[in-house]
Image (cartoon, rainbow, N blue to C red; front, side, top):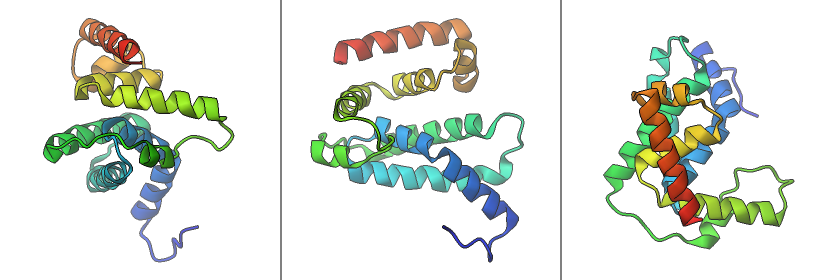
Length: 167
């Protein structure tokens, strides 16, 4: 447990929200980076960028929606700045657990296969799949990505088809 006694109310509020939504950051990190060390680096970068932007969060949308946008944009920029994609190292990916401990080995293997396939998609397709997995509607995806709803649905269907082929 963190000691909040010397923190400002803004810091406390931020840490509580990050703790509540850290699974989102883990998922994005795992979708965009293919080895454990890069995933940890991206997680830290997303958290840092969210902290830097947090004072501008106006509450016009839910925190989770705002977090998705910041996290996905950070992941895309981070990936582009890396300019190197390492090969997937199964033992490292396996160690980066973001799921509940009560998942069985079969579910764990299926998730690992899914994340490996998602990592092969381009940045936009990864974002679309992420929103889809978070049960966003076509309209919500379009709003978050700054495209039309029809375009979002077409791109999402293509991304899902690519993902099916990869799996």
